[in-house]
Image (cartoon, rainbow, N blue to C red; front, top):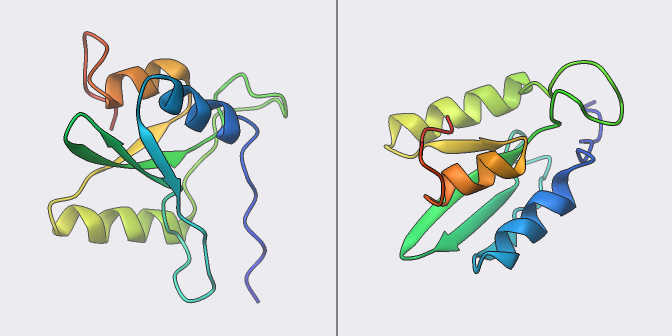
Length: 108
């Protein structure tokens, strides 16, 4: 039996931050039928961004940054085979880069 997915502590903050920048953010609920799904679809300036929120290295729980589960790795690889990249958001800087609002747009 699969354990219930945890929501990272920075999840709401990062999605709200993207919305405050003008993005339309739709969360993607997980399901037993499709474990490993990313967290959100983000529409911004004519682009559709697939976002996975992970705990930042200095997260409240301590320890390192949140890691992708095996299911998430498989989902991201399947998306990549279809030409879709899933951006990983750990910090507000990651959100800015993903939306193309920072100097470096490499988030992956």
